[in-house]
Each structure stands twice: as C-alpha cells, then as structure tokens.
Length: 274
Image (cartoon, rainbow, N blue to C red):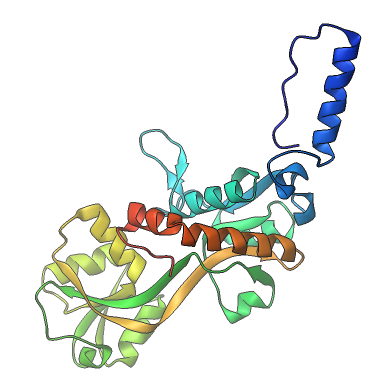
C-alpha cells in the first residue's frame, strides 16, 4: 500500500477492528487513487512494491548530479523520472551507480529502470527494452558567433575542428574533410575556438545548450545540425514490458502537458524532448 491511513485514537476494540479492516481493503486494491497505486505497482514486477527504483550516476551534470547548495540529487533525468513515478502513482528511490556497472545492476534486478541518458541503439535493443525517448539531440557544428563561412558539414572541408579522439564527432568531422586537432573534451575545444585556434567543433547539441545555459552570452553559435539525432530513454530488462508501456503513457501525458518542455527549459533553455 503506497499511502497508508493513520489510525485515529482507539476508543474501543470495535473501532480497532474497523481500522484493521479498512487497511486490509486498501491493501487489496479497493479504494485508493489509481489502479497502479492501490495495487502497489505489483503488475509491473517492481523490485520494491509501490516504488520505482531508478539507477542513475549522480555525477553527470546536468542530467543527474548533487546540488552544490542542498546536496540533493537533481538534474533533468532525475526530474523526468520523478514526474513519471508520480504519474504512475508510485514512490521513487534512486540508486547511484557508476556507469560501468549500471547495466549489470539492471540485469541483476537491483533496480527497475536506468535513467542516465541511455542512448537507444540496435546493439542495446537486442538486450533491453526502451521507453519512448525523453531526450532527442542532433549533432551540431559550433562556430564563433558571426562566422558565416560554415553553414553545413560540406563546409568543414579544409577547416580545422577541435575534437576528442574517442568521440563519434571526431569521425564525423574527419569524414566531412576537416583537419582535426585532438582535444580532451568540450571545454578545451571551446577554449581553442574562442581563441581562433580552430574554426569549429562538432558535438552533441545538449552539450552546447548546457554550455550556453551556464555561461549566458557565449560568443558561440550553431552553424548546422545533423539530420539524425541521438535519442535517450529509460532502459528496462526484457521482462518489464508492462512497466515500459506504463512509462510510455506517462511520458506521453507529460509531453502533452508541457512538463517535459518545462524541464528542458529549466536545464537547457530549450525543449530537448522531441
């Protein structure tokens, strides 16, 4: 039972018996605020009845991290998961897990879903179920504001871009004909771009939006976007089809109500859910 009634002062044995009967009825599913809530979410095969147990890193800003002031676990993925749990009439608990161990924990049944910007790809779809995406992000070419010499990926030919050697964006920049200068990550790429050492950098749009949201007027601009976008969603084991369907319905409602757009604006300054 997800919302137990507190018994009033017991005045007689008869009153006590009535309270027990009322609690038993609530547990059996009569009354309550919704089918999934009154049943404790048992139809979903949850790790803990009545509670959605969510795996997330807790160190992945702005998706899942601890607020510098309060220390609370916050972030875009965290708030999306909380909104979904509320729609399902479930409590929610987060298990902070390192990325290298997160899928093993899901396989072992330690939690119900992963909410940590898990990208949907064919290899993962062989082993896991995915909800409808709640994050959609294309790749972008980022240039200095006012630079109109690059308006598409074909324009990268002969230009110099700053890219991490281990990223997919490094490959895309090379395939577009760019001379690639290797960097350790986004921060270094931006520093080189701002100093005019490189012409552009190719990266995920979410990374760019987060940078602009954190830094205000950045002096940077998006010159072009990829046609295809990366999609991130809740990941579940193959036996959680009922929970997957319920999460999809919740996400549909949250999208229609504008909740996902609001969360995108809060963390990125833009709706990143579609």
